[in-house]
Image 1 (spheres, rainbow, N blue to C red):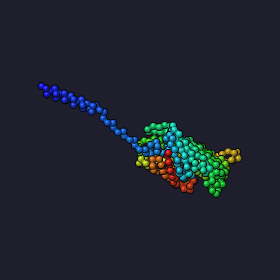
Image 2: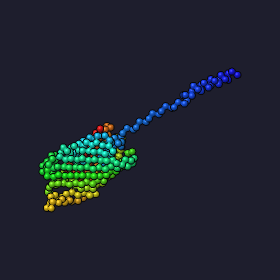
Image 3: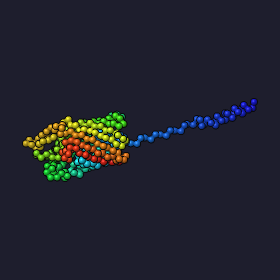
Length: 292
């Protein structure tokens, strides 16, 4: 009769000793580390011909040559800064060094999972007498000219899949050339820098790896006009409509992340504008970007 109460007391003691261990919380699971940034992340995604802008407090230094766009034509030594609120400001110091000035601003104001929208505004000024890299007859003609170029545009970007992004830009450029160039023309005129133009630019980006993308875009003007006579009898400027066949161009590009903040861009341009600038319809350009 005495064994049962002793056994019962022993069982109750063992239960009390094991209760804290049974009530203890299981060890917390280790939090999964975020995936490393890639070319689609805000820190690395391309702001050129897209709706995106630099993240807040981010600097970008761009060094390039042989571009055909208004912001990177001839050469580029760009300094850009992410002000915040989706706003980015940029200045091309290389243009300043050859007598030109190129300033641009971008605003990424719609940011969703599958659709983004951004706006851009630029100002481009060239004083021909300061354009020291021109030589010979070109130098004589350009020295008599001043040019103003003001592009304003809207760009939509749609990252539909992890490996695919579509872009579409609509841009109107107001251009004006001041001075006289007679029948000789000028590099500003032939390269359509002083044109008034309404342009659509569709593009597609394939992210073939986290560090590499292939890009294809087309510059498709719906309307282009160029000045054909300045300082006429009535002091008026006359404009000539440029056919689509003389103003369209296409661009293929390879963008690669060399490190987490250094990016290389190799582009191949085809069109009459490349021929006017560099003497060949098919022409390469390059750009190196460093983000800080």
